[in-house]
Every structure is written in structure tokens, then in C-alpha cells.
Length: 107
Image 1 (cartoon, helix red, strand yellow):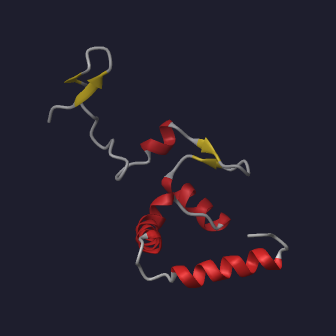
Image 2 (cartoon, rainbow, N blue to C red; image 1 turned 90 degrees about the vertical axis):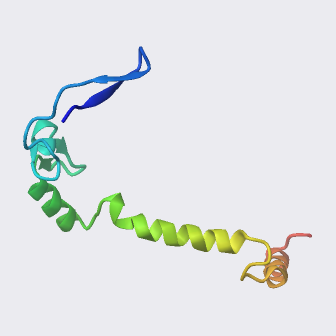
């Protein structure tokens, strides 16, 4: 299968090098072994297994774990800021006025 890459000089797609068998990041640790990195605590991460173990031990995750969460929150924000949506503008205004008065501010 031919592989093409973008040439920024000619601004065209041109034939590029063919990937080597087993280069897919889904089936190989080459992504890690060719470009190992050091975690903030100094841990060397040069394989998928080490990365997975480090994340579990440190209690962290990758951003792709939040893909669905971000979409749900975006929909909630859109609904909240849409005029006439589920939030009560009058009650919200009254709450803001009460909070400002409580803090000693003038309207």
C-alpha cells in the first residue's frame, strides 16, 4: 500500500516511505522504545506495560478516557447558556443580586 506525506514546500501530497511491518503503535512498543520519556517523578517509560503500570500507580490517566465526558459536559453547557433553556434566568438573577448585597456591593 502506498503512503503519502504532505510536502510543505510544494503544498502537495507526495509519495513517502512505506511503514515497516509491525510499526503500528497498536501492535508494537516501538513508539515507546524509539522515543522513551521520563515521567515527572523520574520514572523511565519505554514500553506500553511500563506506561500502563506507571499510570495505575500514580493514579493518572490519558485524555482519551475523558472523550465522552467532555462531549456530555459540552451539551450541558450549551443547554445552560441557551436562552429559554432549562435554567431559570429570573432565579439566577435574584441569586446574584442577593450574593452581591451580602458581600456589600451595590447594584
